[in-house]
Image (tube, rainbow, N blue to C red):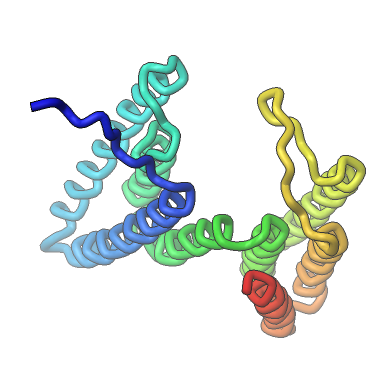
Length: 260
C-alpha cells in the first residue's frame, strides 16, 4: 500500500497562542495547589520534615528542568530542533524551571513566608501572560506600570511602619521616578521611529495605536505621583491604590471595546 503524501497540518498561530495561554494558566493553577499542600505540611510539627523533603525534591526537579531546558535551547539554536510553535521548547522550560528553583529556594531558607507572596505572584503572572497575547501592546505596558506601582505603594507603606526603614520608602520612590523617566525616554524614542524597533537585525513593528504614546506618557507619571502620595500621606494609601485600580479598569474597558 502506498504511503500517504499528505503531511500533518501545521498548527495555526491562533491555536498556538491559545495553547500557550491555557498551559500557563494550568501550570500556575497546579503551582498554587502544590503550594497549598506544601504550606499545610510545613505548618505542623508532625509533617514539617515531610514538607521540607517535598520542597527539596521540587528544588531538584527545578534544577533538572534547568539542565533539560538548556539542552533543548542549545539544540534549537544549533538548528537540530525546531522551536517554532512548540509550547515545550527550551526557553519555556528554562523559564518555568527558574521560577520553580527560586520559589523552592526561598521556602527552604525563609520558611513559609514566601508562599503567601507566591499565591499572588503566580495568578498575576498568568493574567499578565493573557493580557500580553490578547490585548494591544500598549495596554500590556499600562497594566505592567500599574501593577508595579501598586507593589511599590505597598512597599512604601510597609517601610513607613518601622522607623528603621523609612529610608527604604524614599528609595522606593526614587526607583519609581527612575522607572518613569526610563519609560518616558523609551516612548520618545519609539515615537520618533513610529513604533519600529530592530531586533536581531530585523525590523519589528510594535503596532502601537494612535493614542498609545499619549497613554504611555501619562501612565508612568501618574503612577510615580501616586507612589509619592503614599510616601507623604501614608494614611491615604487605599485612595492611591483605588485611583490606580480605577485607572487600570477604565483603560481595560477601553481596550476591550477596541477588540470588539
